[in-house]
Image (cartoon, rainbow, N blue to C red; front, top):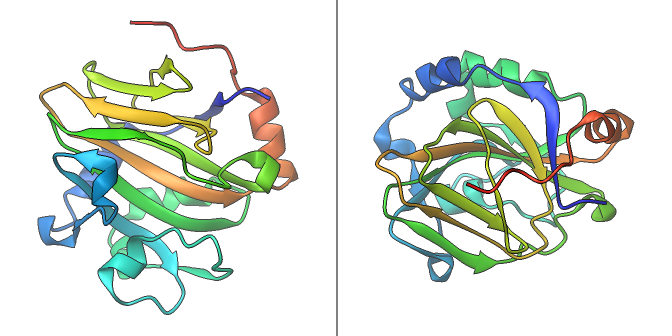
Length: 195
């Protein structure tokens, strides 16, 4: 199977950005794995491990956790609630992730994040710019605003925001079920054009 699939799901990026206005800048937490990035990479939890109250534990996508719940922040975001309702599969951690201009996520791999492990990490681009370079297995992936992508992030990947605006993705960890398998089968697995 390919390491990237653009699903047929499409969402209204402008509406999602309006939801962002409901959230305070203080709600964002610095990503805790500081060795993996340079600059500013922040996270806001919309679904978190059940019982987690500390901000770091709320943004952690704990692979051993079996129970995830919506956060109070998601309650402020009706558009993101509708986006998540479109996924007819069990959702685990769901986070907004913001990479600011001039920041970069270093090459790394997130173990056990592939459909062969029963778990898919999906990215929905909420805000991006042409200067964002997302590289997976040495090849660039161009994620358009509102698009939803499966990316096999157990493989090596990196991101650099060389643009002038924030790059914000809705990052969804989902359990693979027949609905999600069908979505991926219908999606576009062609390589994104080099730019």
